[in-house]
Length: 335
Image (cartoon, rainbow, N blue to C red; front, side):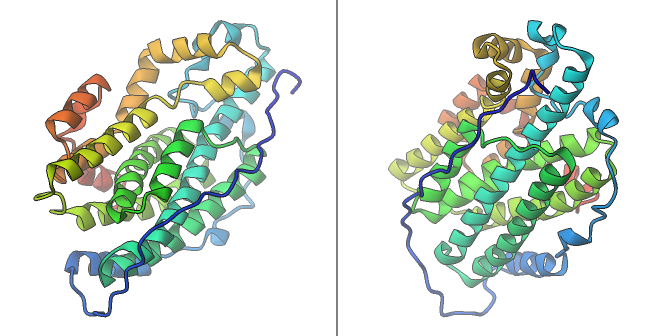
């Protein structure tokens, strides 16, 4: 495809991280809900290699599926100048962009889950974090394989996602790891997975996504249960640190899907593409809807403070504060 080029990703320098390692010599169950979640996770393990990878995908049909939701490239002036063949390939690779970000997020989740085994203060959470580490390794495996074997294309990590992953991995406080990964990144991923599951008709991808969603629903629950009540009596200065982090993370994630990487790969004006995406009704709706799990879970944890609420009003995501993530899980057959 002569009209489409992509810069080769370079190796990132290693991150320096520091965190407290907490031994727990009491091995008895302390938090029944977490212990039950651990048992459920152990029973629900699945093997990516047993999916039917031999099934060919209909690339023509796949290319016309709206997997690029949130990046409405068809509304740019550039789109009209492309040949039909190039349009089909671009939509396919826009889908690859979306799946690539899932892949990179899963690698970040793998590293954070491993950190939580060391950092969390009680045995039940350590047990569950160990099962999540296995889940995330499997997610990295299946997304990377799908991109490699089926779409034959992988994009570099989005800059904003990388910033949030770095902030979550390098912070030494265990509750920040829960906030950054379990509550925000995993919450966003669940909404994005749900959207993808509804719109794709590709059987292997649909099956893969449903397995991943079953795991991710538990991961979000792990964060909510672990942090429940933790912020009730927190000092105002410490709470402000959490507010800063939440606002920073949500601003990064709300503004990340603006077509910059696609424009760069196509040699288009990033400014024009960004303007189209930011002013597109479908783009705005999609980027806001990703927060329909994040906002109610933050409210449940007592983190929807006046300051955070004001930021969420400005981000146009406050309308999800009373959404019911558990009801959505049931609608997908996850509960």
